[in-house]
Image (cartoon, rainbow, N blue to C red; front, top):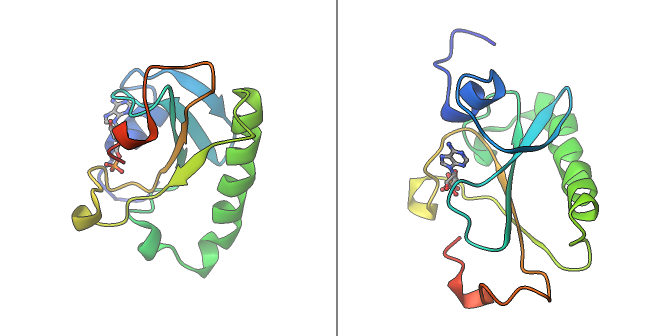
Length: 122
Ligand code: AMP
């Protein structure tokens, strides 16, 4: 890391703040969202602190591609690979609250009656 101030997610990556980790490798970590908007709501976060998707640069091309492949892996791991959504909020006006790039992986498995699609505020 550089002289950037650690984000909430960097503090989770460093195990300074607890989280339910569902996946981790050298480049990224995935955790259960603390306030789930669907029965499956996982945040997939690059370890590199990129504030917003629009801030990503050419040097981050590989990590962005990696996140997409890992999202597919996680969907299979959780048994939702037939139906899931990926959401990235870019900027405060789009609902971004944590300025460390993250992908929301959202799924509502058929056997879950807890939420309907319209319930998700993401
Ligand atoms: P966004 O609004 O797109 O920036 O998404 C930030 C997400 O982080 C929200 O869905 C929050 O519920 C989630 N969140 C905030 N704090 C935590 C935490 N400590 N552990 C897990 N998820 C969190």
